[in-house]
Length: 70
Image (cartoon, rainbow, N blue to C red; front, side, top):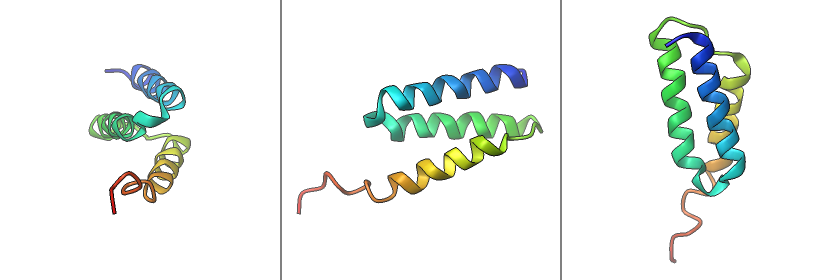
């Protein structure tokens, strides 16, 4: 898969995260998969994508147990 196709796939995932924030964790896994594909092919991972992944990770860490009964 070409670099441009992977970038387009990442862009689609980012759009879905915006549209469906409740599914963010599932979509975040898809994003990690695309990043892994880039790395496996020896392609550079754009810095903005890495920052976004980290931001999603940081934003979601507090939400992990918010819906758990106490």
